[in-house]
Image (cartoon, rainbow, N blue to C red; front, side):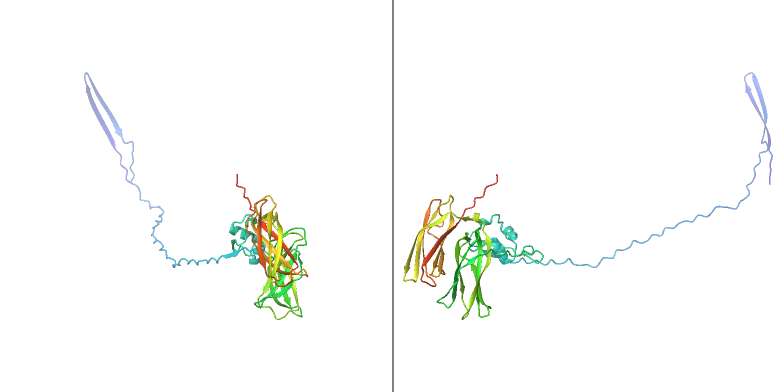
Length: 341
């Protein structure tokens, strides 16, 4: 190791006016030693340097093109139009087409069924929601009991066969929508032919009778017996009917028993105007069987309170002779819709 010692003396003279100062002092390094550093092996721990290698971004592979599904047009079913016949009710119409009464009312905007008119056309909805299915059973109502009179059978000049009869309402409430059938039977009570139809009267009051007629255009050559039965009969919505009509001054005139002329007047004894007034005239033979009937309009189909109108018609009976006649009148009310306040 190399050691060097220094000793230095410094004299400083300062001349000032009237004063001379001599300063002398020694400056010694006081043994200052400069040592050459000894090389020391580096102990630095190497640090790993991370090298970032860029990764190429993944290239998206497009999915195979799937074309948009083509919409299959839903074919709307052709609407069924039903023309209301005399005596038909919504219950009977709904039962005939296998739909609910509510569906018919909704499809036609029917709020009050009493506003329906004969020959009015209504839409019968036939969509899946309207049709009655096994999941929503609606049992057919049991027809109310009716009493049948003896049925008269008469041949038609065209080779057909007429079955004429009447039904009586034995109950205590008016009925409507009455449909009956007649089945011709052989010796073994097996059916040969069958026909059904509405009776003539729209409304059948308690204790009253109405005629009916069924025509067999191609009847069997012979039959042993027959079966007459009720297909439908419902409690009437009497508010739809006008029940203040009476028939007066009935006159019957016959021409050699081939044609019978029935005439008279119908009076309105109620407080309202009667509309769609009709007359039903029925001819009976000595056995009380219906041998002819006819439903007609009088001279005026609208009769004011206290008013009257005349009627006249001709009936050719299927059998005879005619010994009695029954004439009745029917009418409807005008429903007044009260406006919302």
